[in-house]
Length: 288
Ligand SMILES: [Zn+2]
Image 1 (cartoon, rainbow, N blue to C red):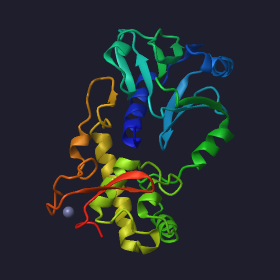
Image 2: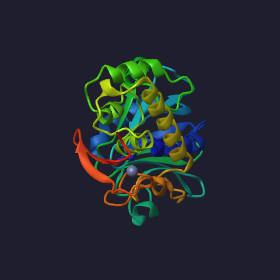
Image 3: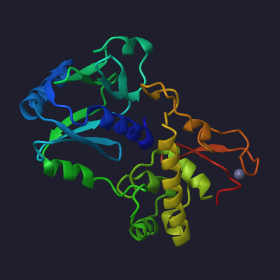
Image 4: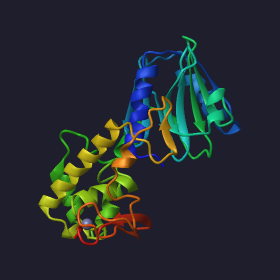
């Protein structure tokens, strides 16, 4: 499952590749999308992409001529947005498919095809089809946005609200940080990294987190996400952007996936356990 930094990388590439382009037609490449595509053609054919936004891992396409229609797109496990330029270059990204899947588009996992008036095309590919495309009005877009708490990347992140929410909770801090309504954008990998950096054991309850620690959690989240976005992150080898700039942030992970290897600080072995059902990596000695 891609984490926020990967989705942000895809968003930035899409923004660059399709903002200002006008949709000439939308084609369904799988029966599951027949109805959606019918609606898309009725509502967004002829409209120009104004921008590509994002909240959490949800992509939001906005249009120039109509601010009461938005396309929501979620990649989930295996989704991709690929844009084919006029000289057949690819941009965008998402889950990596095999080499063959890139050779000819639409490929066998292509579900929806957007044709632009300048001859370029965008494909929504999704092997396992957990991802989705939804057309909503402004109210629907705002409702979708309201399901997410603030992102640590915000310059005006509301630290006091976050601290209150954490300190009122008797859930483990790991579960609280994974809760997208409390703080948006941290997935399993980055929560482990944030807790390692702040030296907080993942099982500690929210009520036991101090004001100072809450502040440090937000700071570490921001630092780690920013670093990952900068590295053009690719989660494992399963996620790559299509310009083949393989991200190298996974090499910078300090605790995730490092079980049974020495802690970078104290040399004690990193432990792996499960907290709220998720694989969790931590150092027993450094994290209290
Ligand atoms: Zn340690």
